Image 1 (cartoon, helix red, strand yellow):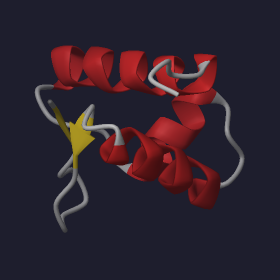
Image 2 (cartoon, helix red, strand yellow):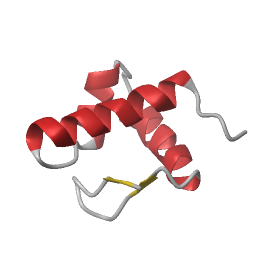
Image 3 (cartoon, one colour):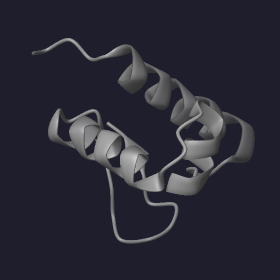
Length: 68
């Protein structure tokens, strides 16, 4: 269970690259488009899994995702 899925890895890479390119975190919708997920709900679910694993943290704002 410690291993992350390929989709989770792809989302983490997307977040890392977005922050490097734009200087701020992507929104859930921006992540969805970047990784090819049609639903922001699916993306939010994946982000929740990453947060539970301690790989990211999220606040209440649109661009509140932080890498841990």
